[in-house]
Image (tube, rainbow, N blue to C red; front, side, top):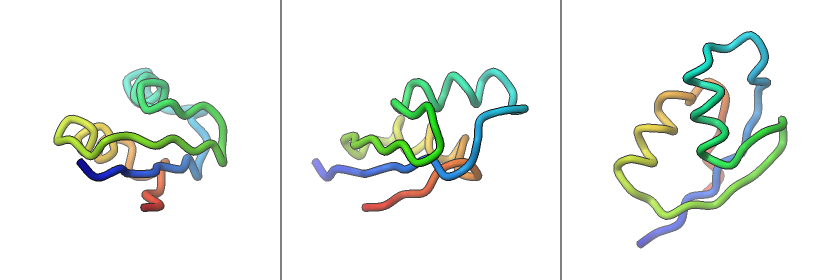
Length: 58
């Protein structure tokens, strides 16, 4: 499968708890942190939930 690289571009402060937990599940914690995952439908759903906080690099 293809890999997706995700970068956190906005802070998780003052966000609902479910969005904070989604960022943790993606392996992101600070602005500028980057993680790489396999492209799956469940991962796309998590990215969609926090799309205003992250950026897909590749």
